[in-house]
Length: 218
Image 1 (cartoon, rainbow, N blue to C red):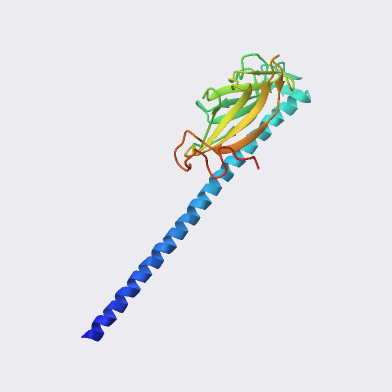
Image 2 (cartoon, one colour):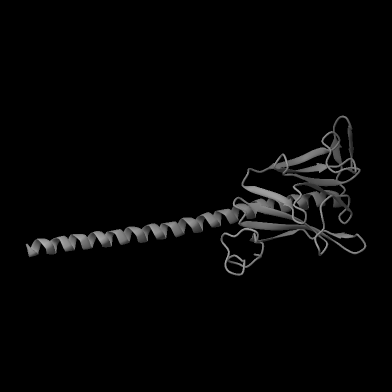
């Protein structure tokens, strides 16, 4: 009888150990999955942001180089666009942005302006004017430092875009230019990455993520 109890104790002991091993394995796998998901999210955000930055630089370079554009009917012509080249952001109804040649002073007008490129996004991304939360706006380069825009300047006189990814825990801020006191715009195009401070998840006690409130662009 004592031997039988001893065997049961051994069997029960092995069952507890096996359970602990399973729990440990699940915990390790969960950490690995979370790390991989976060890495993937950051990579997606960086890729989308870098594409946007490249397209803004492309628009600026078209204006700086005074590249002529072939406008089709009803304005059949080959010329430098009268109002330069612009980029129009439409997150209100289209979830996209458009690179275009501008023929008027009213921002993007489908009936008159000419689309060069359109980039569409799914619902994982949100993009807005960082200083007004406006999600339908434009930025036009007439020359490198002469611009037209309905964006709102920041307190330090910068034109900035805010890119949010999926659960809004991660963001990038894209700077297009900075306006001087005399209205001259310096086009210092670049991006920084960080944690969205309005989002509670994934932050430590001081409101920052793993690399602080802002991470350097890679």
